[in-house]
Length: 128
Image (cartoon, rainbow, N blue to C red):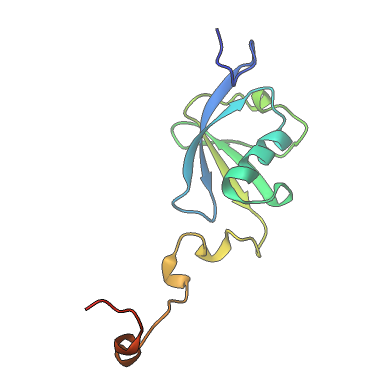
């Protein structure tokens, strides 16, 4: 008996998803083999923030060898014969994407608020 999240008879695969701009992003995601590549991109957009139109997908086997680029949005994922443990790599083609430049991961790029010691000592409600 299948889980409530899986349609009976619907085969799925567990893929490790990585992202070109998000070095610390790595997620294990279940995909139906019947999903079109466009539907896979829609699902990934919700997880990593890269828009469907700016997304290029590559499939790698469990040894790290590239199997294929997943360029035909109308083909089902199963056409590319992915297996559990394979890696699906998202390449963000948008140079102005929110994921580019490390802004989502590197906190050193965020301007910090600084306060002088004098201003800190003068603030109201400070604990002694």
